[in-house]
Length: 330
Image 1 (cartoon, rainbow, N blue to C red):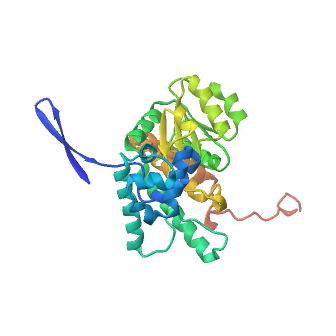
Image 2: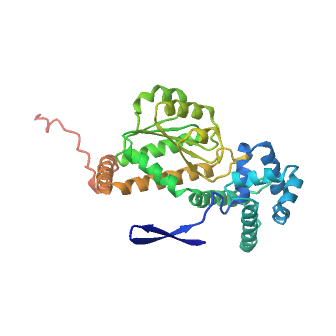
């Protein structure tokens, strides 16, 4: 829904369109399940009650949800606000909306793309493809534009961008370093605690450290960003967790939306979601100084091109082995 908002600037009037939004969109049930590790005990109880029977829960008022979960009305309100809603009525409408979309789509596929041990190969393929495509869609919808712009501002102003990511997030960290270097932005990526801490002198005040962590609870990530934060480095966090120790430290947090389950720990969906954020940031950064960016990209492309394979027609034919006569013999 679009809301017209009028701003007065001196004698002129500027009209801006503002779109109401909250951080949870199409995959509400999957998001609830995904956030359980970061929930408090009462929130876990509420989440379990809703996930056990979403259709039944969607018809309950706030008191009934509190009774069913063994919590309180105040706990239900806090649960809804943790997920980014103003209160229970807005949360309930979002839940009803998601269930209605599932019925309209005529699919029996779980909205979170969950996989069971009894699924056939065809079902595994279908569910993983669904979860991966959903991760891109919901991550794009979940990104806060204001925070996104502030992140690009910080990247543009930084002389060096450090990047930290462990395990599967380490692959995304290396991808981001490659992209930034191609754009002409000095960057360095680390995939282990020791290397990151011993390289702390590379970043100065005004530089940026990008931390990539799906859970936001990785102890080594927390140690690294804490050390760099004390030095005055701007911390940008890319994470899936709405609430975590890492989000409490970061200056700017960009949230992904991807679910990992027991059978899909380190799933591709989480990396795809992170890569989506990385791609959006790098393209926006490239737009800021297109002439300089294009020059850097051209240099990179030329350097790589000189090392690429040549067409068969361009390959010199091997010279015949010299004979004794060609060497000057008779």
